[in-house]
Length: 197
Image (tube, rainbow, N blue to C red):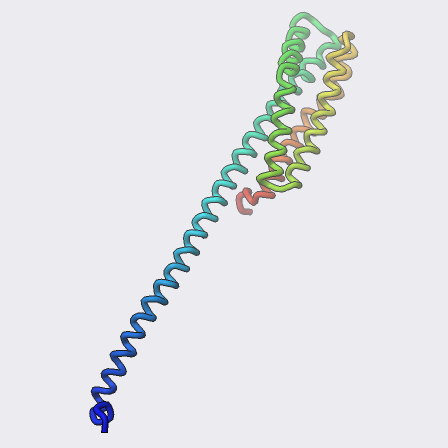
């Protein structure tokens, strides 16, 4: 008889020891493998989360910038239309206010239009293509109003200016005010940046 069969307790202890040793090695290797996978997933999650946070911050900043430049353009345009409506019965004060408003508008229009178009391009990049399309549609509307204001500014007849600006005023005062708010709201909705119900 062999030693291992004569002493079954020793055999069981030896087999148990070998199994424990192999199990410990396999367990350590498996634990290391799984810990590494868990760590990789956690790091990937943290990177994705940080990237998402940066995107949200960029979208929020874009909405603020776009809103600011749109409202600046609107207030420049509304001043021209508001003071220009009074040109039908002009006096020196009315003419001076209109001329200051028109001068300010002309000085700022190209920068405002450029900024709106630039922000539209950025919106297409950090929101989606439909965001760019929305900004472009809005841009077309304000470009149409700008063309009307240019025609008014090219005319020397004060009464004619007053009539033309009287027609432009409600578009800028009401329609484009609502359009700006709708544009910003729509982009915020696309980015799921609106507060809960």
